[in-house]
Each structure stands twice: as C-alpha cells, then as structure tokens.
Amino acid sequence: MLPRVMALPSEPSRRRPRSATVRAIARRFESDLSASVLAAGSRVPNVRQISERVAMGRALWRELVVGFASQLSELRLGFTQLAALYVLADGSTTTVGELAESLGRSPSATSRLVDGLVRRRLVERHEEAEDRRQRLLSLTQRGQALLRAVDRARADQFLTAVRPMPTPERALVAMGVAALATRAFSRKGRVVRGDPEAR
Image (cartoon, rainbow, N blue to C red; front, side, top):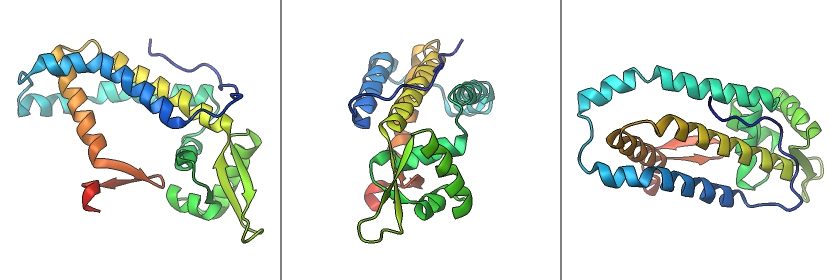
C-alpha cells in the first residue's frame, strides 16, 4: 500500500521555510538512491530496453496518479487548487489576474478558486500599498504546511516504487530524474524547457 497523507495538516506555530523541506526530501533521496548510482557503474540497459520499459510504464504512472488523486481527495483539494498553491509557493505575492494567466483560466474562475482557498485559510489577500483596489495573494502558514505534506507524500510514493528495482535500474531512474530536473524549472508556475543558463 502506498503511503498517503490522511488529514489536512494543522497550522504550525512558526513558519518553516519551504527550502528546509526540499533539503529534507533531497537527503531522503540521496540516502535511498546514491548507493545504487555508485554501484551501477556502466551496467545500465541498452536503448531498446529503455524504450520498451518506458512504453510499459503505464502501470507505474497509474500508481502515481491514483495515489496522488487519493491524497487530494483526503485533503479535499482539487488539482487546480493545488496548482494555484504551487504558483504562490515561492513566497512572492501575485494578483488574481497573474494567477489566472499562470493557470490558464479566466480571471472570474480564478477569483472563485481563490475564494475557496481563502475560506480554508490556505491563501490570504492583502491590499497593495500603491493601489488599494488591487488585492495581492500569498500563501498562509497553513498553505505552506499543506504543500510540505504533499511533497513528502509524493517523495515517499516515488521511493516506494523505486526501491524494489535492481541496482542498475534504480541508478537509471535517479540519473534520469536528475537530468529532467536540471532542464526544467518553474517560472510563475510554468515549466521552462531548455538550458536555464541559455535564457
């Protein structure tokens, strides 16, 4: 059974930087996967084997998606709501219009989405100093705690799927994920493809 978060996390008394959670998850991945990478050396499958296994990866994808959907259901959170929280997770504030553009939704639909997140104390609105008619959005401590719980659960689920693999395949997964992460980074909720240094 894949690990899941069973309830909405309570609001912490002190704000914990999101980067601390990222470092903790990175250490978990390092302890789990680094030995496999070192032990594998050059013993990785050939291109045809890789292609066949990627094509058969639907079962793994299914497990990841089902586990993710189950967690969102337990948290009573929709996927678009979660996407909105991640857009706001870098700590900067944004307007409803900017959030709508990042999510590819209309401002009116995004405004209703934000209303729900505000009612749940995951997002808060602030008046902009220069234009008091403009409202800025930011994550609350409760919103930050929820994202930390989601991140930890997804890391646990990934490692649960990877641990039974033979050493060379675990190494291949670790190196592949690292390569993908190096070439894709989030800018206001959108994935930018290509070499970040070239931009």
